[in-house]
Image (cartoon, rainbow, N blue to C red):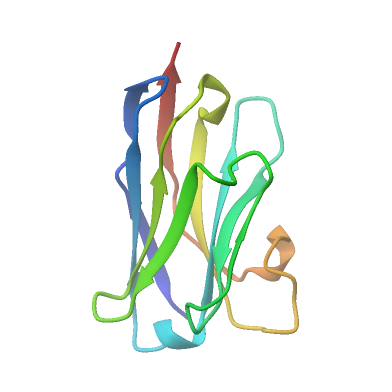
Length: 125
């Protein structure tokens, strides 16, 4: 199973940008679809974005569409989340996740069997 480690979180003003990275260990990274989820205080974890195993399909939550971009680099075994035009409501712990079953929806938390430890993103107004 792939091991995932997120980085790149921090404090940013509204309207600013951050790029989150997720480093994957193991030789099976190519067989994983990857996703980003987030959890704000007092709320359930929610889907943010996903990219399929080939890198040709990307999916976004309506709340981030047009502002966030997910990408992956097979040479570095990494997946990224570029976040622009950040809003205070984007404040959350962001988690990277991996999915090996292409039959399952990438928008669902239960579809993923590998998770990182999370990285905090705080957007000040």
